[in-house]
Image (tube, rainbow, N blue to C red; front, side, top):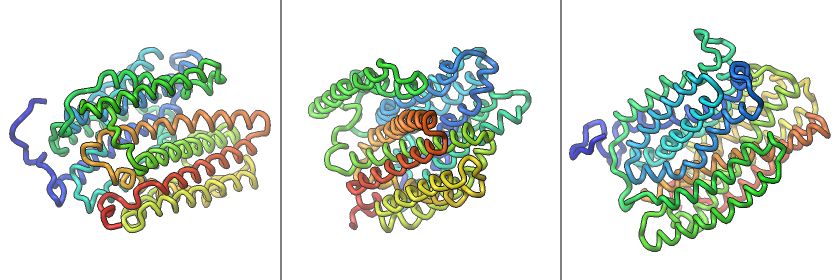
Length: 485
């Protein structure tokens, strides 16, 4: 993109009333979120068909998912900083185009090696695209409307995560035009091109954040190494039985993270553009928000994993049957997120997060009770009430979460804040899958599937209560209301 001194009409800077195309811009950002969340979940359903096409062991198939997760988590904060330096619009469009190209490479893969490599590149471009979204939304919406914009993330994230397996099962089973499993990647082509083309037109041009001058390359190396040392064993350890090297790798990440933190403090003191702004972690507001996002993500990932494993491996349901059963959960998420974002969040602030935690924990315990009562003979109708309550709580929590988390963050800090929140969301999800997945399989082997399901769901409820406790230190109100309370 060439620099220009004139701003085209469609990219005019936002006024106090907000950018004229702000709702279209929000739709573009949400479209990118949908692609990322679908790609995180949809491939798992296609894994057996991919293995049938390429052969190979379970490790190869696992890496088709893990390669994306690993590169995405490792590069998220760097991607956010590149948006600060070179403009969020530019990085968003570049990330969307790269993501689309890599999706085509995945669909055209001739062996598992090419597919794994393309997935890793796809995750890297997603890390460039996704963290720009929060900063873009804050730049195009007025303070009065930004809460409603953030509230849209709740239902979109929940629905995409839940419906991914259902869509994957349908696409693989339907074998559209003989494409088989390749359609789970081909579906990204129209979505990615739409995100790139619409983003180029409706997102206002920006030239980076004032004061951001250069990329902290030593920080990139240290942070990437620390994240890889932590995330790699998390995505591989459960399948391998947690050999000693996985534990040593996770322990080794701690001193590398400490070195990174020391470097960031030194660069900030010298006014030399650190990769992560240390000022974000002064006070309790943002650090507690990070904890809430990470713990909630672990709980949500653990819940989804436990539920699908119980239905598919325990009750022997098909992926399509299990996915359709989650529709009440999706409807609850939408209802809760709309209510919390449109009315409850701006009025009651973080108390809505506390309410969401409690309602979701009660729904999770109700799922436990359902399996305890009916066992593996449980029907979709018998699970419906507990799923609706769980989804309602999830939506209440997710609706105002990012808006409140960013309440005390300046525009100059929003890139770093977005990268950190997204990275901790990914990390929390990986930790939830690794720990609760391991617990589920261990308990299932010794105590049976129903008992393992109940105990794991109990752990999910405990995680939710811990997230609720951490939320007491979050900012009280969303950004537009923070000054009045």
